[in-house]
Length: 291
Image 1 (cartoon, one colour):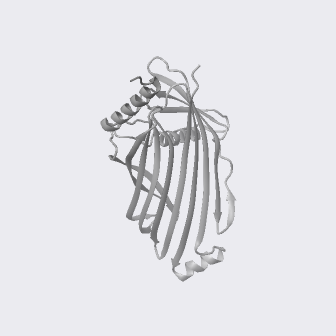
Image 2: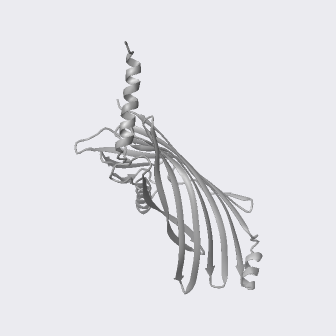
Image 3: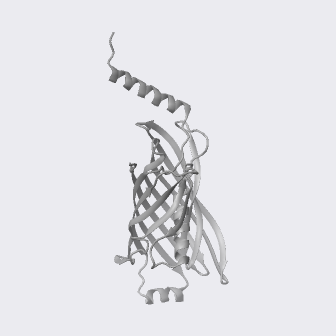
């Protein structure tokens, strides 16, 4: 029997895909030399917060024209273009980041506010990356930014791009790994920091991509004091999401997330109760720019 070559190639590809799914895959996030990464992130937030407590304090709130409950929305868009250069001796290569978009629009009880344009837009951030995936950003163009601001922005971006870590061992379909990411909740001038627990479950490997389901959760029970002001609070959050990872490119190309948070915060004789729903999408287009 004569079997055509394309059919044999198809069978071979299916076999190796099946074999890889059975033996597990080691996932790493790393930038490749001479590549372009165009990333667009959109985050939507809808929140409601009510305040109750001491009558005199409530009168002060009403005198300021604040309507309760407060209904807040925000839309944040981020567009960043990352380019990597040729591999150099020592297994490093240059990397640059350019922000095409970085904006937030907010509404409070229907009144819209737009933040001033970010100083990052139009700036170029320079750094180096290793073949193992470690990135270090060290400088930024633009005379409008002082050295302290450059340093803080560079540190923030470093933390953002190096935040997600896959386990060192191979993952098989159905297996999970857990990660915690920071979450900030600013209340009454205090920036409270918590962590969201994310469980990633590998569900499918096909077409050289790996697909993950995300299960997110958070809970806090805290008591703190600032300037003799006591604050206590409790909160819980749940969410889900999807992640698509390119095995060929060693990089996530798509992620979606939904998170629902409920909390109650007491500051002295005032109580704030709130709920916030957040959804986000993260898309990255990867292409080779090798000469």
